[in-house]
Length: 164
Image (cartoon, rainbow, N blue to C red; front, side, top):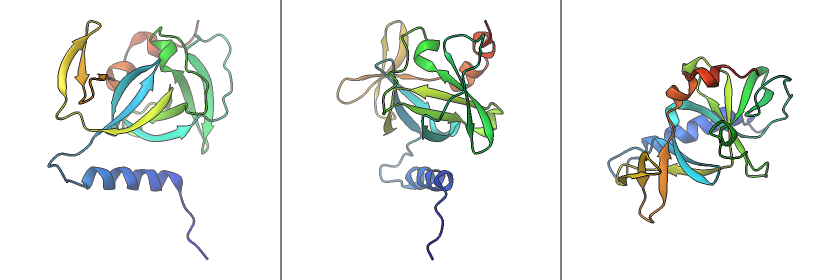
């Protein structure tokens, strides 16, 4: 009889193995995501899981960026559309949409809705650049990347007040 596969343990194990693999002398610690057509980097230690968009229960009298709550393995998570929160449109609603579960170390049951996950990115050798009045990175192919300040996001008064 085969051993049962726990997806969360598998993802965590995979992340740890990828970070421990040290071919270039540095560890990859950021995940590339796309929000409203723009590339963003998220620190891996700030998220615990990446999932397909779960079934959502709409919560009345909340701001448009608060998409609702989702039951993920018996825990309720607030689902926030980052594109809408940033006033850049809304998540596409396509099959590529994903939610990033905020790590338990933040003591915040939030799931951040993004358009798509672009995979692990190593920005250690990328150029620092400024575009659209914001500092970020430029990769080898000239693409611009912003860094998502997860801790800053979770402490913003507007983020903490989802009710209208």
